Image 1: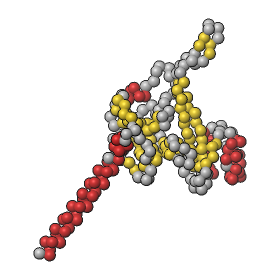
Image 2: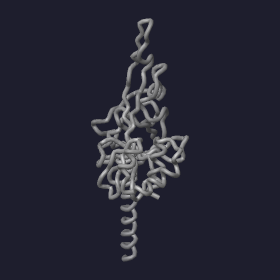
Image 3: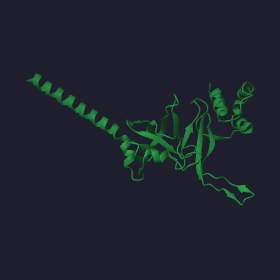
Image 4: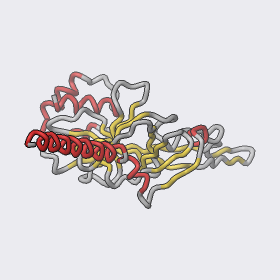
Length: 244
């Protein structure tokens, strides 16, 4: 009798555990659906060809990539969101994540609970990491240098659409004869301690000011890279050097 009771108890216990695992799995699988179900999301019926195509002679794009790419989402509780089967891109004008399952129905995600977006283009071995940094602002920033124990470097891309404004009186021509999406990049450095940040521009004066606590290391880096162009790649190499 006791043996039978024990067997029944084991069966009930295993059944309960199996049900809990199924519930948890279902919850994870439905995670991305939760972002689609929010009342503020936008659903757009549009083909992949339409979303990435532009008017003839248009320069640039409102989207980060010119095609759908795979991605990962991490929520504000540092939990991974199951994104199997979905493709993503980033809208540089609206500062929003767009996603699709079939490359025809495009959904703008409600992102208040999303902390990190990682996009995986085929041409790169490493993902492009978009991250919300409340210390700096509400929009996603691109983390462009390896995370270190001192500095973290972020890039903000603000894109505006500018219509063609070409004019001529037969003698003098002004403006451009094409529409374009114009990107404006800004750079931010989260300082040691992670409690403050500085805006840094691509100038020696700005770099010297922001990294004044590492003056000697900056001077060594400058001596090693004196012939390099002062551009985004230079700034990335500098921050990686200071973090090493």
